[in-house]
Length: 211
Image 1: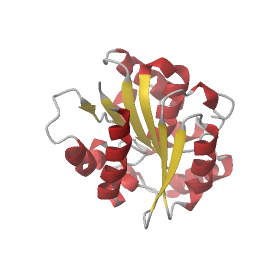
Image 2 (image 1 turned 90 degrees about the horizontal axis):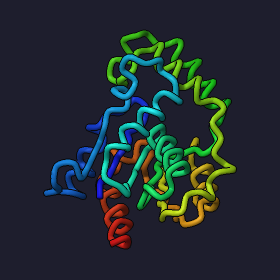
Image 3 (image 1 turned 135 degrees about the vertical axis):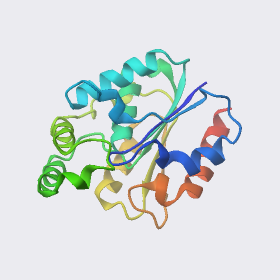
Image 4 (image 1 turned 45 degrees about the vertical axis):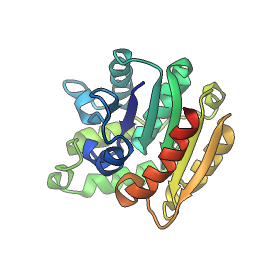
């Protein structure tokens, strides 16, 4: 049963390294998957819908059901996939997640991105124009009326200092049928890199209850 970890915007597969290495120290090849999201869009226009469809195609070739964990953009993709494929997901972990896109926040973020030089995007996996296109295409995403489709156990995490996503994460945990909310102390948005050891502890307990 594969464990799929989807990173956030501005991150890459390496962002899961410390947590995954301790959670699965001797896992067989193919059990733990940490794809690079930008690779899904090679040769395609950088839009959310193209990214999501590429993820669906990727998952189509995996053994199922899946354990899916996502942060930020990865969490949006993970939630979307689970809503549309509830029987294919064994567990869902969402970190710093939004289920209804905050248009003002995204607009402000894009305004900031538009002012940054191209060099600032070298480590983000996307070129400047691609990132602007991707985030703009997410403005109207709203899963609030589909959350009841998520039938698997869910864990919703948010960093204590992640004010932009904290309220949405709490609400999401209440709206999902089988979800629990956990706040990660002393941590901001990127829980997987800021507090990997805490993430390991929480996920170990969560996955352990599913065995």
